[in-house]
Amino acid sequence: MSDYLEKRVKPIRRAIILGFLERSKAYTSNADILMSVINGTPDGVTAYYSEVVEDLRWLEEKGYVVLNGLNTIVVEATPAGRRIARRENVDPGIARDTPEV
Image (tube, rainbow, N blue to C red; front, side, top):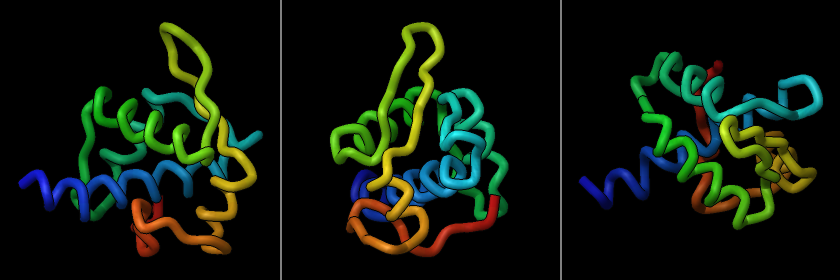
């Protein structure tokens, strides 16, 4: 299951996150909203809050988002993250085909 999670589920969740941020006002959201967005997609991908935070930290390490906040994790897409969301660039850890949110 771990290999499936790493190669299939996490890349989809990360793509959903970046896609939602690309369409959000000021390219910003928070981890709670992103969890709801992921869990509301029609493809059946789900996430717990801790998994969303893990994905956000991965995206931050890659330079695709900036995280702020203590009690509420606020996330903003960087220009590099927005390029991934618009499919102008690729990363093997982020799915290219994702459901509409």
